[in-house]
Length: 446
Image 1 (cartoon, rainbow, N blue to C red):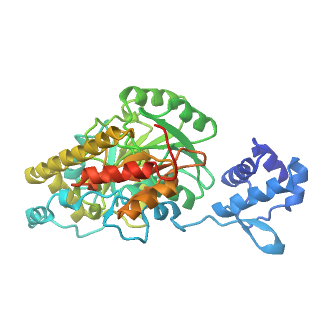
Image 2: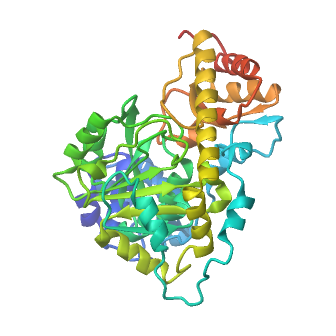
């Protein structure tokens, strides 16, 4: 066991040792139930301090990789099968406090969603499914969605929303302890999925044009076999990946076998052009398109498109569980996508969101606070102190999401995420509250 640790140990720190154990488990070197050597023995053999080994064991316990049984020692744990804790997502949007204006949720404005009644009525006597062996995707829906896909997918399938789609991908193409490159900051539920599956996130930092190629290259060097990104209106930053940047990322990925997973949550309401790495590497990209922001969170549908060799295993695995996503809901989505009435309502919503976002950014800029990002219903607001900022807003009856659940690692500049897509009026009052919150806790120079 010590020899396996020595083989996988590249960094003589607590995190490095924890990573070494996780990689050994992922490689199949140790089965669940195997007892780890005593801390002092590991420390002496690897020339580390007992404190370093003890800290590594603590990291592994929190990650669920090992379990400790007091005097009996520590053992390799059984892989976790659920979303135990869901901690990041709950910390981001699970506040028990009620606000007069809650901008923490990241949800669309219900007033701007297309009317469901006419769409349901239009379904009429649409044929229903009476057996289990139909294609998991309505052919008409696949054809409609495929017309606007950012590259030519060999196959499309449907999942129960973007998080379900991401969960299906992670379970199919990663193993326990594997490393996954993901944007930093990232969408908290995706980080929770990685944690629940025993996967290690490797952060890929962003700038105003998208994920940085050098950061992606570093993540791939560290062994990441999957890269998760949001190509436009990234949540929480609002950054849209530029066409040139997408080509640069594709060039970094090309010499490797890494698979790219793109999550586009803004279909219908996005104002920026969708650029996909799939235009350069179509055989390596799984593109997820969610319809919740434009048509309603309760629709619970997302499309996954890409090479058949990657899509078909996902469909086969789903047959062992939910089987398929409701074809009745798929028909409803098809009606939304093809109805002149619904599309007019979505167009109006897109314009409203764009106006709300831009007015808030302009008001903040006038007050000396610069917010970056190009698209979406959220803005990523730099603050002096995260806790003080949230308290300042709460005092005025406004809720916002803390930035820390979106972040991987520590030492980052503090931010809060604000769902400005819900600010339909009183923009100046909200902007004034955000400006005060950004400076709460002391003086800040911008």
